[in-house]
View 1: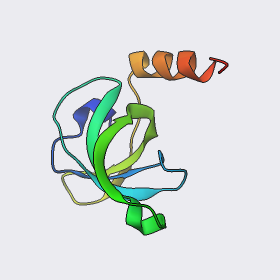
View 2: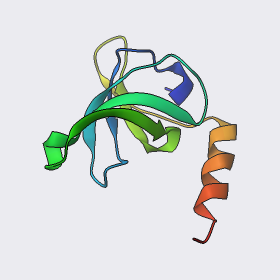
View 3: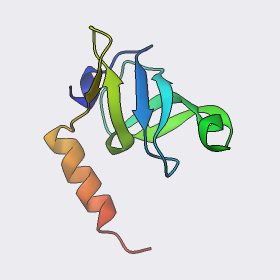
View 4: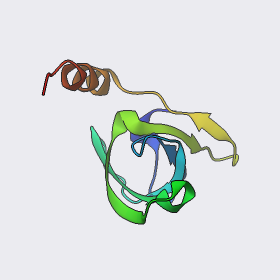
Length: 88
């Protein structure tokens, strides 16, 4: 499943908090940034709404209710590689 195929309300798992946590997709847009509700309380942080980079979305439940690994579009891969190469 591509990140752009994930619809609002879909259960997801993300890595932006440094560990894999569950959450819910909160938008239907396409692109490098998506809006999610994350369950940070699973790892001792706060549950919150916010944006996440597409490359931090690890998996999503498909229409059959099974977890499926998420893959990036070519443009998202390019953006991830550019950002990853920046030195702060």
